[in-house]
Amino acid sequence: MRTDTFINILQNELVVALGCTEPVAIALAAAKARTYVDGNIDKITVYASAGIIKNALAVGIPGTGLTGIDFVAALGAIAGNAEKQLEVLADIKPEDITVAQEMVERGIAVVHLADTPKKLYIEVIIEAETRYAKVVITDNHTNITLIEVDGQIIDRGGCANASFKSSKEDRSELTIDSIVEFVNTVDLAELGLVKMSIELNRKAGLDGLEHAYGLEVGKTIKENVQKGILSDDLISHAMALAAAGSDARMAGSSMPVMANSGSGNQGIAATNPVIAAAEKLGATEEQLIRAAALSHLVTIHIKSKFGRLSALCGVTVSGTGASCGITYLLGGGKAEIKAAIQNMLGNVSGMMCDGAKGGCAMKVATCTSAAVQSALLASKGMTISSTNGFIENEAEKTIDNFCRIGNEATSEIDKLILEMMLNKDI
Image (cartoon, rainbow, N blue to C red; front, side, top):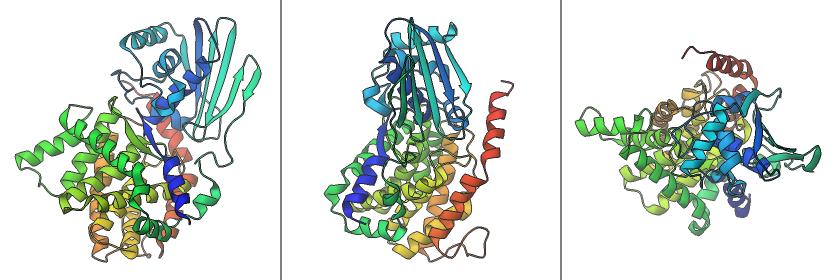
């Protein structure tokens, strides 16, 4: 593959995001719809797929300290800036939060489960006085596929491979071999976006270590290292920095992060363990940037087959990318990097996604620990054998099997999890 193809893929899939991407995408749809109608808002109706509802239900909305799909739809409608895409809520003010809460209390914003086979589907209808506007987002968190105003279709967007912005041809040519070759040979100046991901996601991790967000998973690990209960080793450092970034993000921190394949948690989990490993191993800045690029691209490669949303936890994928990056920092080549993939996917593949929420930080910590362990084994030449479970003799085939499980065998799990989430006694 040509260098510019890899750069294009990175530019498309590494996106600065403020807040969890599912509720933010709802806010984006609402903000876009609002641009087509004037006057007081009478009603906001949200139709969303199970995966969107699952991930938007309980996660913190950035800068508000609040949760709720109806709330974020109202907030996006009254204060969102659709031009800022996944940073749509960057300019909200305290008075906007109050107004959105009042709209929710008055029942102006309502949410329904959409009848759709799509895993990522958002439809927002805003009715304001005598006009209405409908905006539909599908497959990709910023992929607006329909704008309808007063019965007239204004725009029908989308792309042929809407799940990911670059072409299917680009993605089909991605391989572990080509990714490793690119990472080893690309001019460092071409990896500015990767360098930015390191800076943003490290800041988010440090913010989570400093302040009391959510479950304080990362902060608690750090505190127990300081007490001498946990060792100040590579695993503890990586788990703390990665989990802390997730703690902050899931609790509604206003600090932006670099998302990978539509997920901020995946961006954090693909980046921060590699940063922590580089710090512990004394790696150079160049080695860190190349290792992080490897992690991001392996994550994108697997996600292009796995899909944006799944009943399986996406951090299992980004953790696999991180394991490859850590293996690279340990001096591993193609064989060891492929072994790390085999070890990771043979380990954490069964982790379910039960929505975006504070508990995600624990899953980030778990996958980060596994990423370090998998890298250490791979660097020693140890790999899970193809006689074990769905593991094949080639990493690419193992990836295909893993993605088949995520795509073909989990739809009923997703329905069951959502049913449990919506019918709990709280």
